[in-house]
Image (cartoon, rainbow, N blue to C red; front, side):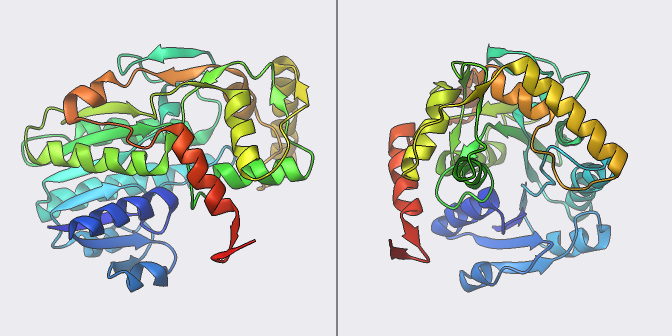
Length: 334
């Protein structure tokens, strides 16, 4: 098959591409930037914005399947910028699939579509979308997921996956942020750090996408549905952060701030940044304060049942691989 991965130059998109290439598939990617490393692997690369309908139509022509991974992530920014990337871009992908007769669409969503700032203890997919969101990323991801699932039909089978806290070698978001803040002496726990959270090792997140796509090509038991994805190993926030720091040869966190204080500081900083028209992300926001202080782990029985998802790389092994990756500099051992 010919398969398009949107955002193939990103962390998750790149991992999905590697697994597809290992299967011998013909792979394309569309991203806003240029990625010579993908081309070197034999990936046909298209450069363009998903909000550009013509660019999406061109990239999808002749494809049999689409993994729609690309998104604008972050906890700060104008609603319109998130809408264009996450909603308008997704609409263009759906439209292109219909135009070209593409039969399978796998969408990368986020568990934050259900997060309303409160604890989520082992919840499953019956939990509804949040009615109020603390930032524009989950708000637009929820809308996009809703439209992807609504597009499911006999001609186009769709599924939405919600991997939580993807991490591992090659991570350019979560792990670097933790390490950078720790080295600057600015990393603190919000609350006790005993709140349990789920995380997903990168290879597991990618394999979940392939497994769901395989099911859409066959039994379609997952068609039109959303699924939480994780390592199925809930861990205390304190332990997760400290294990990542240990992999980077950094000491554990010793400082903490009360959740209410963090939330108040986040609200104040958001107000100040809005007033001053600042585009850079504040050090603290209401969303970050709630994410760091609440419990959010998920029941993933549905993914196991409907498309045989299995977290083949456990947290302990993933941390060893992360430590090895972090110990290297441009491919050379430090």
